[in-house]
Image 1 (cartoon, rainbow, N blue to C red):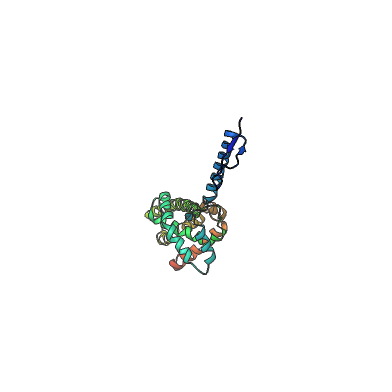
Image 2 (tube, rainbow, N blue to C red):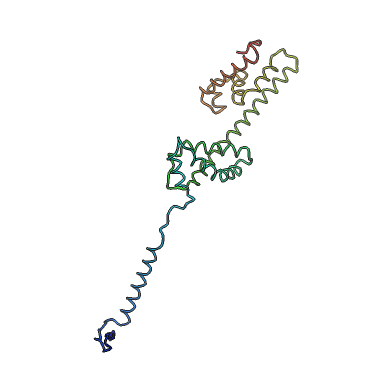
Length: 236
């Protein structure tokens, strides 16, 4: 293969020295590839590196962490920005605006308490979605338990009403009116204890509470019944 000579002109117009350049077309191709590679590297260097997108919310999280608990300006900003997103997701899960608003409040209460433990490898939006889903599931479970308690208590109330209708002397009607003013869990706990004669461990399993919590509810419920009935019927 013949060498390639580069011909140059001197400034005075005379012919300059011919410089041999071995390799011919192969060398030119190598130079072109090298130049193309250098150009690609240059473009890659100029291209901005991928970083966390602004809507990942990390900057806002850091501001909230820095301000709480003394300052709440950035936290209020977070509530303003993300409340609509959380509300929409909650409505899809629970089916109504009232429960969805309760979920929004619960989500930001949890955020307020746990923002210091936020993990920056994921977007704020994903974290809020997870909290929203958990809060919605908890609310749905609570609604189901509440419905079961109401249904069971209603059966006891129906039986008591039938007994009164037969003329059996009792205090059931005023007692039931007072029971109706208690929350569903306390009502059912008292009925299970004094009508079905269940033990406190058994009641705890029925209402999905600790035994100590059941005892406290029953005690407070009885105190309220005594106060409303005025102690005239020997509730104890």
